[in-house]
Length: 170
Image 1 (tube, rainbow, N blue to C red):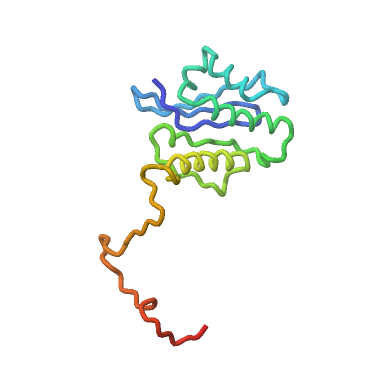
Image 2 (cartoon, helix red, strand yellow):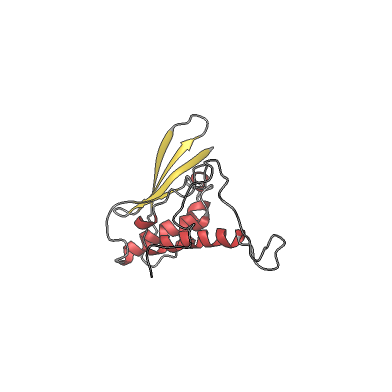
């Protein structure tokens, strides 16, 4: 059984790189899968499906979603087209620990390109909409007031907003 940790691409030569842990031994391994049949006109979803169905590579990629694999391969295809969105020859890595036992919220959104940022925003928006309470929901309360003064730290003294008399006139 394999637990993927990181997945990325190398642009020159085009290669899909996967770092995974063998669960039985706990050892970290790296697998490089050349993208021989991928061209600038390839469709990322089709290439991802071929990789997942490949008898050599499929068992290593089964825990990575089709969507994530398509997104990674799409970057390589953009690079092959000469897209300026990539900008560097560094390998692009996608942290898979959010999906495989890591903690969420560790992604630095400032370092993502536009497509990755939109993907992360859509995930956050989907999570927000699932937790949102709207009028008509059983837990909905129109004018909810919450007192935060009696927490673990106790009430914090703050006299700047207590008096109606002010030294300053606005």
